[in-house]
Image (cartoon, rainbow, N blue to C red; front, top):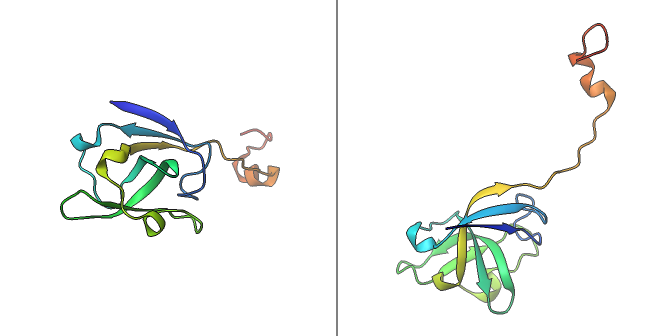
Length: 117
């Protein structure tokens, strides 16, 4: 089954930012998890969270997760998570529109003699 979730918070910024969307595959038991995978899980104290798997216990019953933002709360604060708390594994990331500004000179080399593109 697939699930779409909107990212809230800066835990994995700058790669994942508030307003981005992720596509999850569930249940995760059908999809082997490994260090480096990004997952969404439910934590009893912090609610729904998105983190990267740092490492897993050899028995697979403890998963240590980490965020990339300097103020991210992760397994260093709350310890390992249980596989049962995992909502899904991120298989696709859609970044929200980022604002970019361009000046006219950025396009000068692409213009033809009439001033068009």
